[in-house]
Image (tube, rainbow, N blue to C red; front, side, top):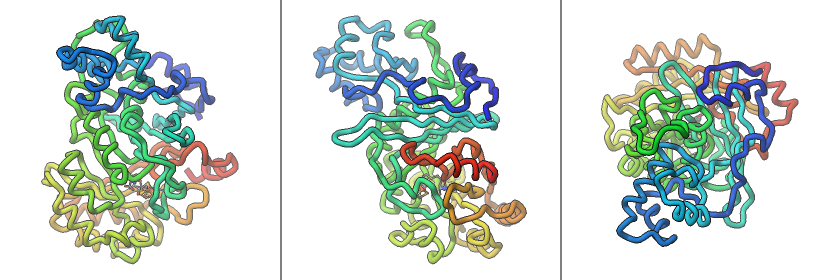
Length: 412
Ligand code: SAH
Ligand code: SF4
């Protein structure tokens, strides 16, 4: 069902009349084969400028100009870069693209959550791919849930994405592109009338937080995620504080320390079970990196402190991991780790073999953990009606059949 929510983007309101938009109606410029300038470091951007003949002495200045247009002003078209010479704009346009990902559908939940299915062009010999990006507005902040891979190689038994085999890693431009597109659609960038060089405030934006909690395991796509988050957190561009960026991992232990040292963002761990036997089943990567190794890596996470805690995610599965004994063991396991525990009511999907714990059980569990001194918010399921909730994401190519969707809407 479509709802009316207050969005700055003028055209966004009209679109709310139709909850799901038909393919192509919002498509940005058709994906071209030209390399993208989005997601590059300043050095790489400099090299790209050099390649189209920008003289060495101008590179630094031109990189700064482009950076401003791309990430402060959010332009998706070289011709809008008012203080860049026409000659250079044309050269850039001939060689590169800064187009947004193509929007296949944009849906708005009754609770204001938005989900975009985005299509990216084939890379190399592959086929075009589709992923999902979700925006969750809350009181005082707005969180964008970004995907890192198309599908996932891991097969967590409660996760819909885990039933889709990995198609490929997303590139840095595709990861940053999700943030740019969301900011476009929400009206987060200044409008075209804002003069070149004007100071653009970073306060009061719709996208205030980014979580790498969409499709895929971000630590299996380390380099691209690292490059993308460096752009997203760059103080002269998108300028999201690293404290407002969270990377969630199922527990790729050897990469955790490296993530802390090289990305410096907030860490979330998909824990979900407190005994190896059960975690082996729910989160199979546990067979490779068992709980002890995982928690040791957490204790050693660079920058860990009471002000910079690790979030442990715990999906509440009825009769599986939701007993008081589990709660006690959880508290015991996490002793000494500055932590916050995020209890996630299980979100069903077609063919899922679990049920969500009873609400009373979830509250009892939360109270126990809370009394042991851990913040333990219960994550309100968001966007279930548009299948945007945690663990419900899956590519368009494997989208649910209508019958399954209708059956689940009753449950949502
Ligand atoms: N692959 C990464 C990040 C994406 S998943 C990871 O596993 O951490 C984001 C969160 O949603 C994870 O904690 C995941 O375990 C959880 N999740 C997956 N399926 C879910 C479901 N059906 N219901 C509730 N949470 C789910
Ligand atoms: Fe992959 Fe995370 Fe889903 Fe596990 S929970 S299958 S790691 S996306």
